[in-house]
Image 1 (tube, rainbow, N blue to C red):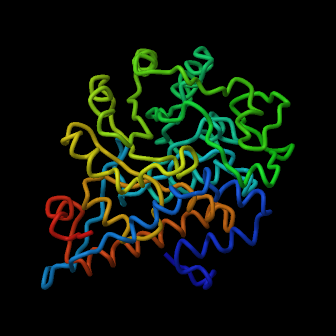
Image 2 (cartoon, one colour; image 1 turned 120 degrees about the vertical axis):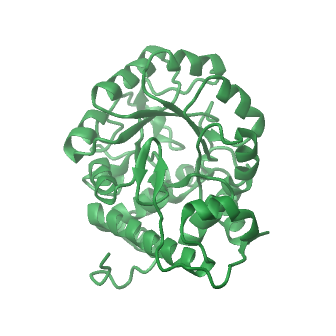
Length: 362
């Protein structure tokens, strides 16, 4: 990957710095901010940094195998894109550019139901035939089922259901900034209500009312309405693993929703080992929340994850460079991951998974 065109970008945090300069304050804060005091946002990074690595010496690392299988597809990296909505806030091409970039990089992408481009248009205009679609169990069950039906018809290959969000978290930066969506950006899979609630633009989206009464039988209800595999995103407590597996879900994503829902929840990397232990290899486990470095990815794989998903870094790169910015950001992480594996003495992700416990501390 050639990064000479943008010498100021040498890591993912550089994209964040440039995105801050490129976006209005209220838009950057919407993307970057979290709930409450943002303790969980900081914990996602702090707990990754706290884990220390113990490299092996004199191992053959002349060839490195970083291939993974994520969300039912082969990927050159153990990396994918988390569902992040309203991407046209940061770039005119929005989710189409991101989906094109995912296809070019060969990594999976989960398209948000809150996409600022209609789900059919994301699939058609990007040419990406391996997209997954994210939804909530909305209070309007007919709308929920229709979104899944539309995703099936548009060629999406799986459904990610976000759980652990019965209501919207309180995001104080949005409230202070009196954040509203511009007239030319909306959740394109829905209509608009005309209602303004600065905390979260979901309130301006017709039909996108979260259901605080949703329970496990509602996941079974949704499963019975699609032939696509279902993955649950937002699992943090190992007590939620047995009912999830009883429903024969295809995988779990450990996530605190980027610290944007319940503040002071455990970090994603902190929760990961207990979820992996509870799953005991029965379904794949992925994780998102705070991943910025190749060494972060190494730590997640060593702790049992099949791969990591990226949220804010994708939006930062999209804001800075559109399609190419996202492709380059993935390239940076690939370079970092390769170097980290070599310096750690691991020639493959399989080796890292098998012997990960001996390679980390803290």
